Length: 164
Image 1 (cartoon, rainbow, N blue to C red):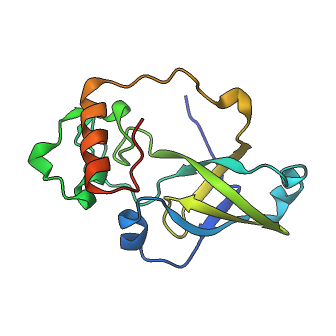
Image 2: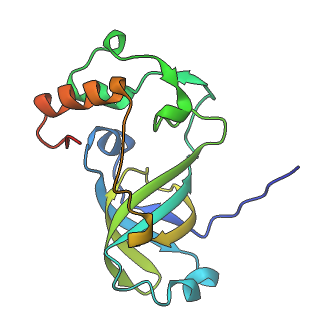
Image 3: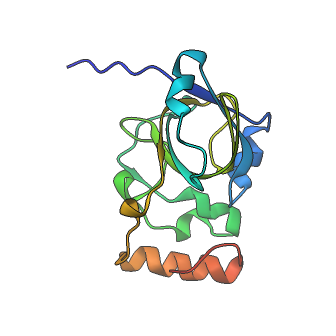
């Protein structure tokens, strides 16, 4: 089976990859929708958040077991992080390098969406955009103990990390 996906637009913020990697809350920027997909933006204004599905075009490798390296920026040492299956993490090293990001929709300027909370590199191809709606909200979230322990320690190290 062959699956062919085409970008509907691209991320634009002009920041270096290192700035995006190091910013816990994501960065502000734009999703520039290609002209042929601009009519698909009708009705999107007024939603506070959007779900962005993107292709991780700079992802290197495809691992099935990883360590949650995003915590390194909070002072964790690599050897202190558990090795878990890639599907239990947000690691970009995955069999299919796809990203799902929930971003705050700040404004729509023609076919440019101004958003905050982006954790995607400049030039990342966007495959789809969906509104974040109440039906998607999870009320009874549960987490494995390894994740809760890391989250508690991360929130002690940096108040921007939210505890569950």
